[in-house]
Length: 613
Image (cartoon, rainbow, N blue to C red; front, side, top):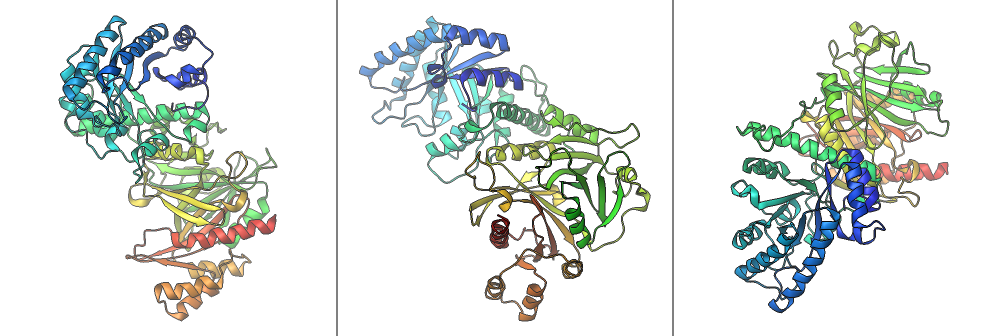
């Protein structure tokens, strides 16, 4: 149910991604033209086990007079499962009104169901639904399983049904692993809505939400549980996204979770290699130590280089072996500009991000283990090796060495001497890089940046724009060395794409004196993104600012925000293709991103886009 497509397409995608097995969701089987025997053969051909059939609803906790019909239905399901070749049936707790509320009687029904299942060699995994009428916690379900005391009856632990109720997994480590028949995992963002709607629409893969799945897996490891660990994700976006991408994202999430669990078990003094469950961990993530470079790819080279000059950048050199590739520098900021001759229809865009890490080879190996697509980059034998991967939105991310004094060794390929370092300037670094995300790949992007770059999400915000709400989620490294806000814009009418240049990506550059940067840029002919007079009048009301200071802001086209720590001044350039530049100055420890000013930018960019037609 995590995947789009037919049952056969889902099985092929799961096998191609590298999964060991799948659960079979009854609605998929019912609409499939393949017989159970054919599906069993397909699974064998693909190397997949069929680990569970689900769901069996309203089978227990029913009135005594209705229970014989439950057993009749159970026999039919067991016969089908024998044909299909799967041996575990998920039995859900009852959500109907008027259900049986006597635990001993429910256990008796489970025991009778176990007798029927035993005739077919089937195990029954009893699961507490979070919205169950009587049984809605894992402890309650497990207690009834123990009362049933039948070898064919065990518990299914489902992380969503546990954590969505605000419950904990304390006590799982004391469970008999032989009575845990199945484990289903789902993460989710913390939302304030009814649990059923939350469950049906907003589950995500591990690492993409807010649940502590590491705690659950660590306790399961302590029990010695060695059965299946499965993903059960109801998510509207996943069911519409490319089936192969979603399958890869799902396996990436499990590998990341296994790695996190191994680290947690080791830190707690446990043994991640204790049989029968061995936790395979990955090499430690190589957290970014600094930004290395940003790459703009364009078919309008003159427009891009003119804007960089206006901002104070200088041409540092042309690449010695790559045609039409040059680097522009100012202080520690390096922007590579490559002329795009392969596809003249592509607008100017932010094509690649480079970060400096301690060991690029280890970073690349970890990315490979996490199923990241590598960038096929041509290079000569004497050129610096830059390992690259493709992010979910198509942006290329490269891992580079730190170099001497933070100056990358690849600069020599542009005719520069790395020993000279970068000249002093008003720019002090890359403050953040804002990436626009297709709605169907947002959750994938969060996990990708978390697992590969060790970035961590801050609370998300919604920003109002002329075309609807824009969701913004900041991903940042420890200490804020690298900050990447992810923006999910409203869907356009065609193919869920963004509404053109109304939602571009941008590079935010930090500076020491934004007034000086702005005045220099204006002298060189740069026209900033327009800011209405109404905005500056509102500033006075919001912050009680000195009128002379507000006049200074307005005369230089600057926007302003402040928090409890400090102040934030910034301006935006016009959009070139799909990208623009923001220049920022943080004063006295301001930590935000000027979110109150985002509607001003969005409205101005919307008008700019409308004028261009």
